[in-house]
Amino acid sequence: MVRFRTVHVICDNLSAHKAPVVHKWLLAHPRFELHFTPTYSSWINQVERWFAELQRRCLERGVFCSLDELKTTLEDWIKTWNEDARPFKWTKTADQIIDRICRYCDRISGPDH
Image (cartoon, rainbow, N blue to C red; front, side, top):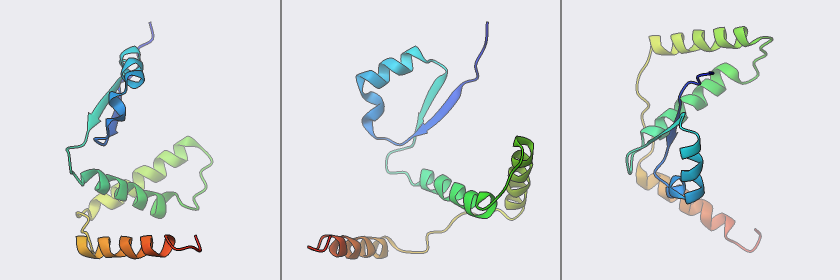
């Protein structure tokens, strides 16, 4: 018998996972274990931001001729990152972010779009 590893999936709190078809699929595939972010949490944004840094600083324009080469590159980058690890800090206030979104919405809501 082949044993599969558990696949841990981090989900936000949208209710898509509550749809009957999704629930039925999950019951048929017990190796998938869902974990949900707390309501109104922003830590998942921090995880996404870290992966964006990984992509931009490590993978973008990279050429990897083997899986081992990719793995070594990723592990080296993560080790370097962790040597000087520090938390991400938001550089804008909530008001600044909302103002920018409002200006963007005004721009794209005109008749030219």
